[in-house]
Image (cartoon, rainbow, N blue to C red; front, top):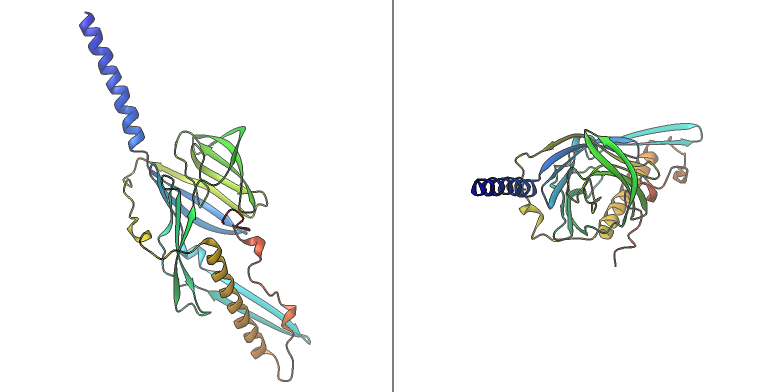
Length: 277
């Protein structure tokens, strides 16, 4: 009888151990987010396993950006509408590896106004640099129990909801470092929001296709910002040239009436880079 009881206890132990081990080894899934950026609605996806994730934003929504310029020159109105970068190829997305404390973001940046040629960027950054404050607030998101946290990252304060039901330290974009997956995030100015719409677990994505992220020439987020601002300056010059060419003969343009920036500094996700030495 004692031998039988011992066998049952051993069986129970191995069943429990096997369940925990299997769960820990196979934690993977996919989250579809709705991403709002300065009022623009975009679709995003996070594919993850225990220690890695790839975050992507759908190009068809991201790249249909329209720049509209209106100038009033001696009661002559000029409207210029330009579709920017409709044909940017799909990038690899943003790879986060929390074991190696590394983020690599791949993207294509146009190098001319017409977006015929592109600069391929691999931007390398550090993961787990956000100091989070855990709050005593909970709510349910897509049937997952979530806890609230608050943290500061590069000039913005984020309130996020993470779930210990999915115990991995990942989330959308560069938001990570909590004891569970981040399902919702909002900055304090309500300029950027991430909302989990669909969550699938235990799907066949244990091995990511990450080879394209490695053995590249990497730049810092600061250099990436500089390259983007140079492109914005080029776009401004092109737009102002279109205004000049559209004016009635003899009218002199005073284009300082038109905003000199297409993207203001406080409209970027990352406002400052004080943490980068």
